[in-house]
Image 1 (tube, helix red, strand yellow):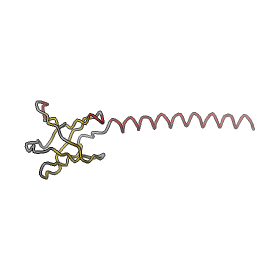
Image 2: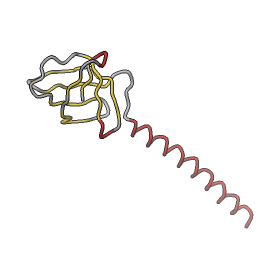
Image 3: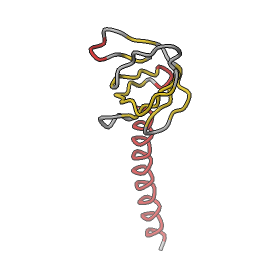
Image 4: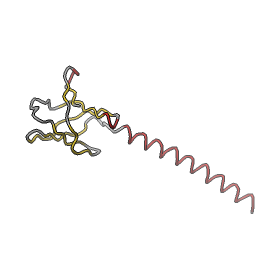
Length: 102
């Protein structure tokens, strides 16, 4: 869903391509889309600040602005940090046990 500035209007669209830096959207016959908008993707549980990069017929390419990130990426990064800390603790335990047996 494209949310116009101010949130007073929104239109549905289809995400055709998604990357970490932007999207390709199929907007059908809607031609009056603003150059900047918010894109809400419920399947990703995310909302992105976007800027139009190109327009072709009923499609637009938009890049994410203002450091917008997918919350899923943040969750994965957080989980990786937790696993790294857990790995360090386990490695310490192994080292302690090895030094006790020597």
